Length: 395
Image (cartoon, rainbow, N blue to C red):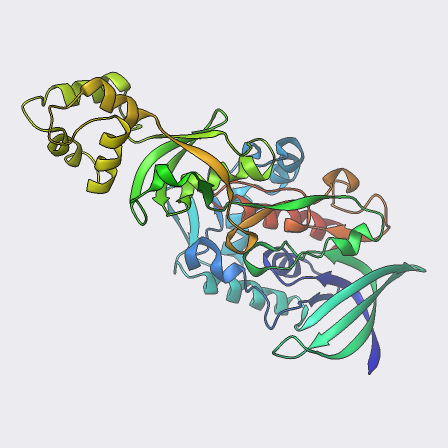
């Protein structure tokens, strides 16, 4: 049975950007339409459940569209994001330049945003899947499917709104890609590709290393990332690998290219070679296991053609340590991605993220073709884009 209702501002999606927008916007009635059973589900999983809100060093250079993203970051930078959350009552802390809720629990962020949104008078409707958006007269008509706990349809709603905001994110980590709602209105979009996701490599390079973690630097297509690498039987994960995966998602890196690990990034090649050469009275095995996890030591020796029980060949071993190469085969699927690279073309939206094609239609967050690296970049984009839309629609 279909019923009809009228809204002022309809926000499609109930994630980070949508909640922030509702918490920022006053003087207008905001209604969030979330397809899932609850709002903020993906937010709870960010930062391994700790919710890395932003980073002190987040800049335009961290994004795929630096000039375009930079415009919005300048108006609502990390410092303002911190002030915003503190003003809502969320206590924050900085660890290694990354900003977290003091509790280090993502639920604190979600609870704070939900409380602030309710104080602003926002309405949060769950199990509402928007199937179509049509421009009619001076507003919009949304066809909404109502579902039960299992996702089965239980009814339909015909909702009209004065303005509509697309904030559905993407298909990353079980999210929902709904940019087709806007492409049906005439917008264009770049196809989504998994980003901030584990990388698949040749099996030989990671053989026997599954589960081993190393702190190193990794380079792909001239871009260097430092941090942890976690070896898997299919490739590599960890922060450094996640950051490099953005190159593949954005089309800058292709299958067959080399990922080069510097296993001792804080030392030069000459320093590594000298350290090994100073221990020629010991076996290669003893020298290497004094520097690395035993399984990493064994792979280094094998790659260098070095018998473990022989006198260490300093030059050969140092060369492998400073440039352990793997071949890129691709990346993991979207369900393992933190974000997706792609979305609606930012060129089709103005400085308030208002559509240049459809009057009173807006977009924010992951729905737009903006994606960043690890370290709070993508949540910062959610806050910055929500602020831009709020400035346009709030009073």
